[in-house]
Length: 545
Ligand code: AHR
Image (tube, rainbow, N blue to C red; front, top):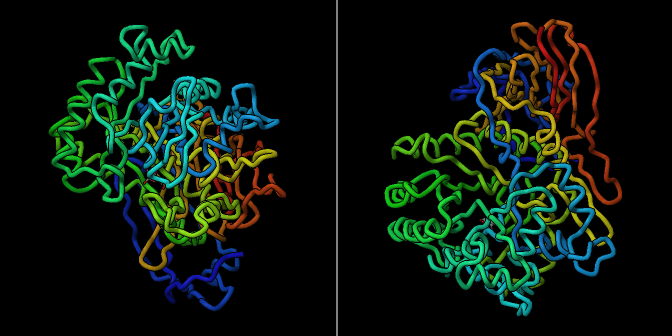
């Protein structure tokens, strides 16, 4: 059931003109609909009668597309709550292998074809000393970020081995909080040198004769935030990244380097001026439902009206790179994203918070992760795809438990709504994003507006096969989506993989693990159109003559 919202009296029905490769603009027209905001009320009357909306998707499959990087389907694993211990790593569990990795988790994540996983944080990284997590004698340490003891039984070697088992590249985020440039570069020695020096020899002594070959390394995590352990000023940040990058590249010149960045303000300009020449990516993060202090997840409508914000942040980051002369040289990694902010009162630490662990368990409540999360996540992925020339990595935060697509409990797993979205995108898109524009109805409330239908078109090498990622964000209205694609027959056969749920608030849980599950149909377009149910994500595949 929807929560009651304090929404303004008038709902604007707007004409939107969203162009895949340029900025969005909306024409507002006052809608006849009036919101009724009494207890249990919903959206406008027009929508309550299942009002219809429409959109036209125009695309040119013959245009040279932009190949997107599959690292857009990346993930993030942090030492927070039950992501590692009790998540991916549970020695002694009857469903864990001899290395302690949950085998059901490995099997499920294998379905997502995850290309890269970022670890060990996040805020955890900013006080983590990697040497405590290698070797035969692991002593627990106090995790200053999250105020708990970390047993250090899951460290670099375990992480790399786990990544290889799910088929993902390991991506390590180094400690630029309390750590040093030397500690970061020693970590690269441990992972990537064959046998020279004490750290490569240490890895070999720990049983790993071959290098781990970790390609992706980030310098720091959100060191711009005052609350981050070892926070840095913009004046401190550039030189620290520069000197760290020099030392890390001196160990392995082939690594791909990222650094914590913001999309506004002078922090990133200063970073680029001081260290841009050493970087391959800037790392940006986004969470849009602020739940760190009070765990009161926003309802569907409130969440969905924020769907355009990730693309705006991408555009800001692109402008920063252009303004500083690094467009085309440095790419963007959205390497922490989730609609829902994590709930972690009392950060950093949390010791003053009564029943801290019980409060953290609020992150695991499956009823939080509804079609709002699915539709928002698909919208963010569409935004990244539209900017495939600049956004080359995105990591959902996190991969298991908390706000992740996979919930892990002692006896099994639950694939949440977002799991199915990630799987659809990872499995069904064609390799090249082609120019497309979607024009149609939208909806607005409380000063925020969003297009009801969002579309991205991908094409195969010959420009004949296509896969469209279509989203109907509307909470109650079906959308008639008309295609205008040269060569596409009005009655063309298409295959539709659809995720919609029986309500905007549908979710999966232990008792109902498949309440929201994708369904696939082969159907024919009608006059070049198809119907998109409300609150739905559809991957539509076909080909032109
Ligand atoms: O809420 C989790 C935190 O979000 C991550 O540890 C940090 O990187 C981001 O601020």
